[in-house]
Amino acid sequence: MENKEDLAKISPVQLDAKSSLQFKCHEGLNCFTKCCRGINIILTPYDIIRLKNRLQLTSDQFLAIYTKPELLEKTDLPVVTLKLSDDKQKSCPFVRDTGCIIYEDRPTACRYYPVGVATLSNKEDYKDGFYFLINESHCEGFKEDKIQTITEWRKGQGVDIHDEINEGWTELLVKKRSFPKNIKLTDQSKKMFFMISYNIDKFKEFVFNSSFLERYAIDSAVIEDIKSDEKALLQFGIKWLVHILFNKDKKDDPEFKVASA
Ligand code: SF4
Ligand code: SF4
Image 1 (cartoon, rainbow, N blue to C red):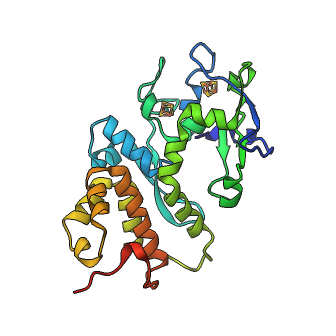
Image 2: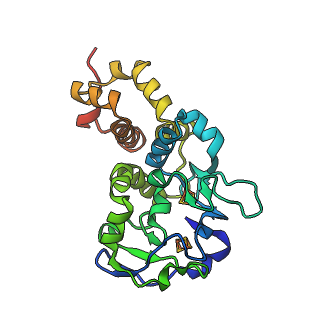
């Protein structure tokens, strides 16, 4: 989550999981909810699952009402960002003067803010805990006296489950980003990427109402799991996406063995 008008405040200092963060955000600060306006939030697949369920919408409805399509820089992959309201401040649709009305299900970017993570630029660094601070001038949270480690901050914000479920997706973006520019994905592959990443309802229909389960010898426990759990279905979908995009010539992929006739 970043405020487009305040980009220059990214701290060049690299932090790791044990680094200290002096910060506290709470109602009562003059800046309260300022960071929820004029922002650019890329939504992750798990964000969409949580938000559409919270709002009791289908994936299609959520995408139509609350998102805007974009191409992710250096990957040529279609992603979605949160569509802002058309008020003067370009507010997030979920912000009120009293705070965020979907706080328990807020997107990953909102949870991390004001901590940035170098996930998309260098996976190895991320594994070693490469973080940085986004210190915007309006943000008064840095003047508060609460001190915690980045690990404690992550725990308090509930980002671990988001990162765990989105892990395969994030790795896929990193992998695609490292491709030479002249290697392009087909439109069909991009459509598949979009469906699995953002439209879990449609992907479920695809898996269970097409010849998909006849083509692959998928373990029956996995089938039960993905039938009842959208998180498991998403993670399964991303693995399959990696299989068809990067490993389809690998005949010994244990998870996606072609079913014998
Ligand atoms: S989702 Fe909530 S926390 Fe995130 S920008 Fe909107 S109001 Fe703020
Ligand atoms: S302290 Fe920072 S993160 Fe919290 S409301 Fe203010 S601007 Fe937003």
